[in-house]
Image (cartoon, rainbow, N blue to C red):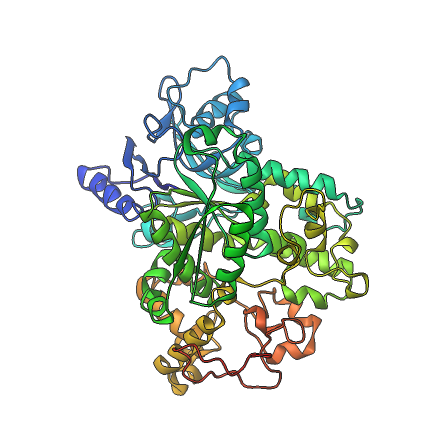
Length: 576
């Protein structure tokens, strides 16, 4: 990942303003510690903090066309850049960077080239010939991008809110799959897949097609000139990523440079479900496995820094981001700069445990569509910002455009959870990789029940967070929360605690409005809470809130106020 900052239409273009842009861009240096770049054209500035993954020696940014009339600053990876270069034979390339194609595609196709890009990206492009500019974000919002407006009429874009929040009167998250054009003065959606309308698909389930699409998605993400690995929790999604990468690594270009043994990484409290499962998968696949531990107290101590980096007060995102943030620091210390991760599968296949209660295939499919559209506010934000905090890039093969199109075209009747037919959550994905002749994974891993990352690192992690928040937030504070925080009012002491930290770093109304709200159970949308009346009394984003579904669910009709669990005691799990 890199960090980008662009400002257009500044009244002040003095040296002091240039110094201010450099100072603000420096706030993004954790995203790109390898090099800094800045291009100034009259009252326009494009800054870049680089994390060098592809072509580390010559791919510094901003990037240009042949005569430097087109300038572009990019955060992301363009996996099909070699194929695109074949379409641009008349253009002269100056670097081996995958992102340089953007400047030349603009020359060739104008503003209508974005859908040609296969990758994850946020970019800002300036055409100095008429001082027009565009800004675009990838289809799902894997990479972050914010847009803001200054009192002097200037327009700002940045990878993270912290780079523009002080200097903009208003700002927002630029929507995924959208492009802003200064010529039109508006945003428009460039990403228009069939599933976006939420109409119910009818294609038959073909396990071979699904498996091949996923393998292709993993392979294209092995494009790197630096050491890499896989985040392996031992759950289905990360295990499949590791299994496919390990199986095909020896025959890939990257193996010539970095060897054919895959590195895998896992973090958890000692004795956690993830650590045990990940070790078993790593042993089965023969990876070089790295196991990291943290304590509840270490996680609590990191909370302020985590919330500063992830720029949200959403409870489930904070819970899951903290161990990922700690793990990324350890990964970077080993010299690794890129990892593959398993985000997106649960949204596409209805993998969260609350999908057990979906009343019919229509509501099941519509909920998956809603979940994919909201990924940029939750899992994509977490995966990107938790890793980028330490200069590590996370790539997510499940969110490949082609793979999503294949998976979302399947008749959702096949995705429905049907115990009577032996189908658990994500059965269509599990079945696609259930190969007795040449197994990808052990059967019990392939059919392991869904664990949300914040649960899998150790159940006492969430309980410890709640206990800590209960000590910091009084009953009176929570009772008056609607007066202190009238927007997205926190309803639990844990949510209130995270909100106070967030407001310390980002006090403006515009900042708090970038964070979603509403009731949720086990990561559901507000709409899906209606599927089970009992859930309205147990609103918690943990998977264990899926009463009657999770094997370690919270006890029903119990007010979940944990005792002091800092030492790992856990009185409220069934079966413990």
